[in-house]
Length: 98
Image (tube, rainbow, N blue to C red):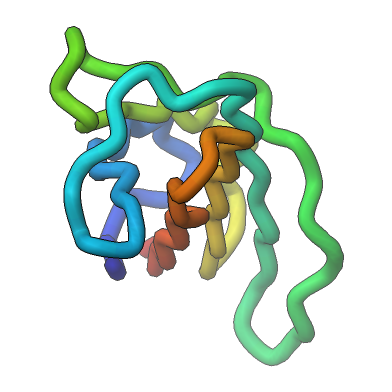
C-alpha cells in the first residue's frame, strides 16, 4: 500500500491486518508500529518506534495509526505494523510526503 500525504502535518492512516488467507485479524496482540523516514537523495536509516501504536476500529480487523507532524517531516516514510498474533502478517505502508 502506498499513500500520499502532506509534509509536517499530522495524519491518520487506516489499513487492515490480515492473515495468510487474506482474512482480517481482529484483536491483534502486542501491536508494534515503527517507521523509517528519509529525504530525497539519502538512504533509509533503521526502523524506529513511532509515538503511537495502531488501534483497531471496533472488532473489524481494520486498524488506524496516527503519525505526528514531526514523524511526517520527511520526503518518504516506510511504516511497518507487527503483531505477535499467530498467523497475522506484518503490514507495510509506504508514504510519499509532499
